[in-house]
Length: 254
Length: 207
Image 1 (cartoon, each protein chain N blue to C red):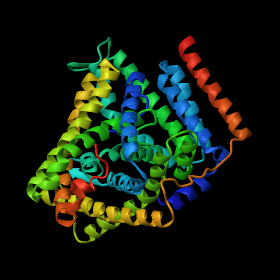
Image 2: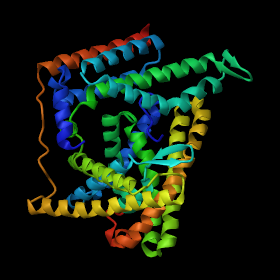
Image 3: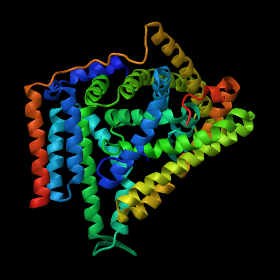
Image 4: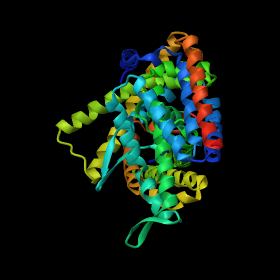
């Protein structure tokens, strides 16, 4: 999506979280992900996942997007999760012929599934609908080096350009009868595609660089910022802190 | 599969990966003066966009990482480029995670920079067929390096992950094949169309 489309999407999703300073969302996301990653008790983890799920619902984003994300995550972790029960030693819970799923392995798998999904829900709820330009600005105001943020902002802008470029090229390949398969022709075609896009991007980079210099660029651009830290942020910050303390407390003390 | 999500690795591995990635980033940012910001950002955008290409390999399909090609073209600036692409993927698509940004950046960028820069001089000097072979070998080595580092991150996190890490390593074989061939052909194309990309003077960020 273009910078404009991403900004429009962020603005139309709205919801109570949109009123927060982007810095609060970034800090809260990091704090909650770190908290959930340190939990070990399954019941506490379940509470954390439920809370993160509620936050995702409140964020006002379409549930289909969430489902898509979580499904991708599960496919990703399948190798890890399906193997753990059978490779970890312990009392067998389920026997399939010569192999047995150990109780320890199953519990470990459950622990990972809950942790990974909880963290993914937090990132979805707090950051997925955040305009990437605001994310960059928030990071700059939180102390991330200016040059890195500047590069990030330009990448957001040109990422959309080159996604469109690649889409256009692959479409023109398809209408000319290109059907990808595992063969030399496919690899050569994709190699040419990557090479072509690289050539165009280098030319584009030169033009952008010259345009920036013409406008007096000397290593610094204003990054700007959106949002102000207000009462809503204070309340949200306390709520996040309280939730994190409660989860860690329950995990360690109960 | 190079995007390890939040909640799998141990805190020590996350911290170690973060420190190593920060080291690579600091070295790259020192060279990233104002003249190179646009170039780095735009190439980061290209590699971010290229990861959307799905290449069929036998019954499976792979998304390209192109770490070695990045190392060949932008040198150490691969570190910030990979970090930025990973932030965008984590936030916009939910691939990877926040706490794993350091580990994932290091796992993808280091082999790319290492093998890319190793092959850089030869790819610049050699004729197209030899340069393509060298670039393909660098790409295969970089994917193997990434696979090894991902497995290492898992194994160092917990002894329980030893077996799954081995299986995960095997899933990188199709990617290795696809990356080696596509990087080789891409370099062949660039040698014909824009050979100055690989000349030493064009090297944007010296190691």
